[in-house]
Amino acid sequence: MHEDDARLIAEVRRALDEGATHLDAATRARLAQARGRAQARRPARWHWWLPAGGAVLASLLVAAVWLGQPAPVPGNGLDSVTDFELLTANDDLELFEQMDFYQWLEEEGMHAG
Image (cartoon, rainbow, N blue to C red):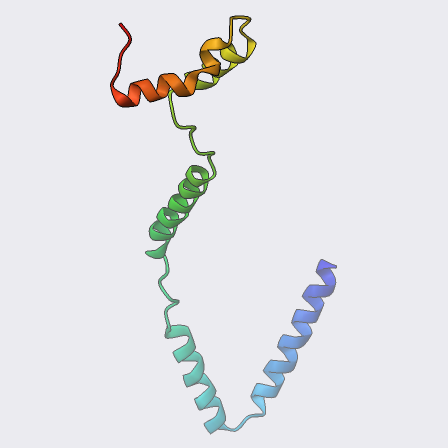
């Protein structure tokens, strides 16, 4: 395939060169000027965007990882242990049955004793 490409390129170049030789002088001069202007143009400088783009990409990755984390459960984590102990305890549940009464006592500021 490489030889076919080289042969095609050679044929195209020969046809273009042959066509250019049959052009009048004014057209050749305009083509030479256009070629000179095209070669004189500098490519756009985008290299200064590279650090800024890297910073933006890093920020987006950090935000995606940070926002993708599950929200922490409020409290110190001992509440679930305490609840589990209450549910599995074989103690007398009379205290817990009267919890509303004890809560009312605390709100009223009345202490036994």
